[in-house]
Image (cartoon, rainbow, N blue to C red; front, side):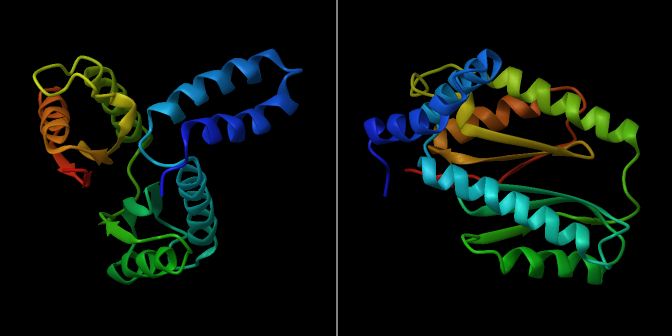
Length: 197
């Protein structure tokens, strides 16, 4: 069930008004409000996704089997992507079980590689690729894409593989995928979208 836009604004105002004494927070809050209004998830779902990410990261960090790995958790509309590296197949499976137990998780995509954690150089390269993909998404245009917003696509990069998540139409998914594929350094693109059509 989607929250009415007026109700969404009231919820955000209730959160932001107590912070009005701090100009940088208000400016950041205004930017966040713009992002929330572009998002097809409800405000409650956005909050749930943030909570899932925090809970999953905390539980994985405490787990002795996953202590020597590098696991990133991304949640979008209750769908969770696990990316990074796990020390063993057992640890990889354990990560899925940990995340499945968290309330509001509807599905888990475990894309963990069984390997030693990537170097800082590889992680930096992945961060740069993510930024390039996000920037390229702002240039997506074409028939049927007049209402496309790149803010509706979550981009995660791990070891040159770009994962795309979001609530999109098939035409939007195809355009976003093609934009990501054209970036130098992208090894492959994995679509984890939910479709509205």
